[in-house]
Image (tube, rainbow, N blue to C red; front, side, top):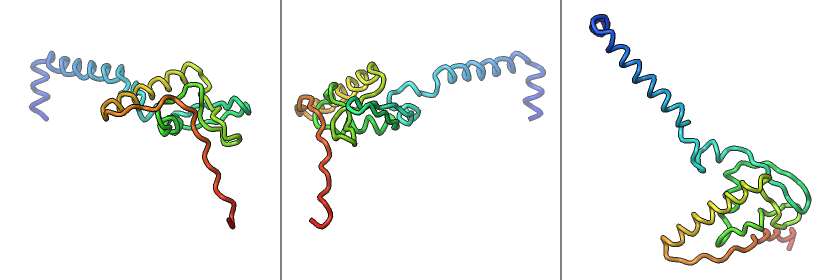
Length: 141
């Protein structure tokens, strides 16, 4: 430790150079923001989004990751005119509150589904509305 101190006292420019490199590194890391710009970053997938059901006017909040998983689980491409299933009415009427965000999400998911299908050499089904879940049979049946 004493050797470093003596070296810095003899050559103060060396200490300033090290400080400058550290400062530039800190600024670059700060500007990059830790990679949160990815559509699949943890910050983005855990943010809460508002879903509005057009048939009942209800609004619910859920994590973006869960919402996108509901869209990904559909067979074939996602139909932009059919939202997620409203649990009250079993109709596909749930859309992101911001229309531009909905369109961007559907476009990104459909592009990824097409790319994955092309890599496997399969053809995707055209967009269709999701099927409502089948209710369980009544007890005692």
